[in-house]
Length: 225
Image 1 (cartoon, rainbow, N blue to C red):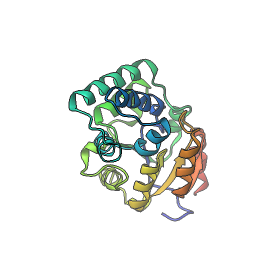
Image 2 (cartoon, one colour):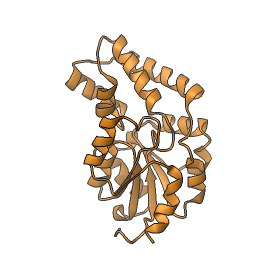
Image 3 (cartoon, rainbow, N blue to C red):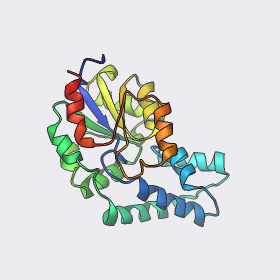
């Protein structure tokens, strides 16, 4: 896809792009790490875990922080996360309006499980606008920052990788989009995006564009025409 051409498919990450979930997820993760006897700062958590699947988070905790979370601890953490989602989760401001205005196909490709994606979108009133075009890291061998999930979504939607545009909020997601040969816009409008270190990490990845108001996206796509 050249700079002048619009995409045929917009691939949305879920957490931090469609739903404002990252502060909730990080808080629950840090609470479990603390109760498991580990110590990870909020800044480290955003740097190491944002946009990663739970399997990858578990590997990083083991390899980088010498902390092994047990299966029961992971189950307890998922239960608490879903409880907080049901009471606290909100959609990203302007996303429903944006989805309704898109003139090209769209789908979701998220590091979360399919059940979590459906729950998040259902709580926030977005599920009917996107189902069944939901793709999870559980559907591929490698999660982000590998390109597998985005390439899987493109194949499922019958669109060439070069005709896709990814909307991401995490360094891992931007790396995955670049590796897949897709253009990528970095979204910095969710409530976790104020972390200076995170903004710097996103900038290092050189996304094609950075924006902080989801309602800008239809006009940005129209500008590619």
